[in-house]
Length: 100
Image (cartoon, rainbow, N blue to C red; front, side, top):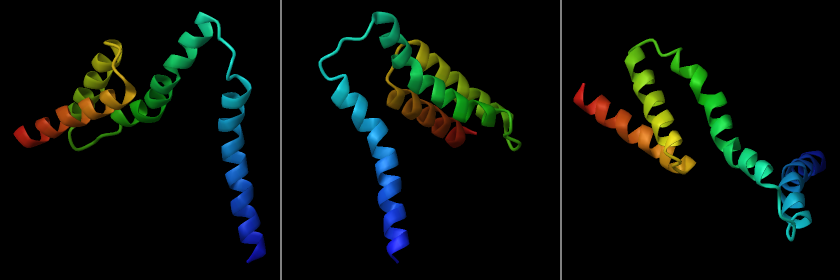
């Protein structure tokens, strides 16, 4: 039982430290505009890398994936927040599922 608790504590530290350290160490620093731009686009890049390949693997209705990806791309290009992009794609696909 002690080993399991130590593993849980270790995993917590491993995930918490990389999130906390930049917040504490870069608290009073300003980043160059280029780096801010790169970091601002990281969520979209990760979202695309995780979800986009699955668009091509939909077998029941390939148009379903195309509509969802198109909606997400359009919303992302307008500068919407990541949450808005995801919720917008879900809303459009829900409407599409209901209509067809």
